[in-house]
Length: 237
Image (cartoon, rainbow, N blue to C red; front, side):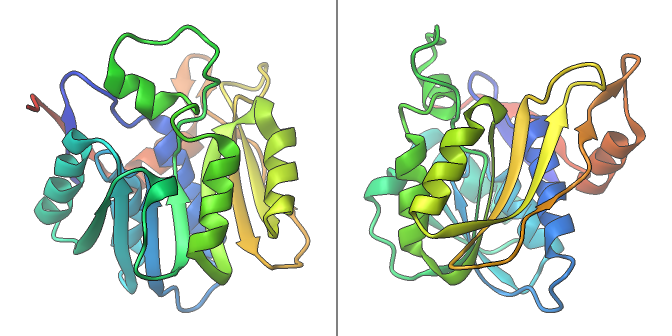
């Protein structure tokens, strides 16, 4: 998958690849994955495009607030021959014309009270004051169908708030996976699969370790191999 990314702005990273793999693993129990898929904060479009590529019965929709990334989402979908419908604006303020069967997102999750980049595009993409956790979850509860699937990644240090807010908005956590830089370090990222109005027990997947003695682990290499993405940096107006 060929993906154009901004030369001076937020670019997708390993979090998105790990989340894509987590989504695929979680969807394996379903025989017919179909319906309307919303990629929240699509950026260059990578997450939704990968999920739609691997589940061709899903109809892709994307929402994005930044004009430059709206352009990239549309451009990358067209170049990879995947149909999409783009909603333009702030996720929490958009008026969607339908409910969705599945929502996926690599949202901005860094606390807004840390030192930020001077790059406005990076601020919006990285820090959760542009989309606070509760607004993110509450809006998704509003736009998802009953029994709808919700996949996202987040800063693991905020796990307590994640669980409280998912419960508040009638989500049940179906699966979790923790991502560690290596076996000697604490997890830094959590991958979450929640389902609206579900009562299933939670499955905790084996931890994903990124590095082993300075090299990618075999599992991470396999994830990148399956994603098969190639980036081209472009200047945007």
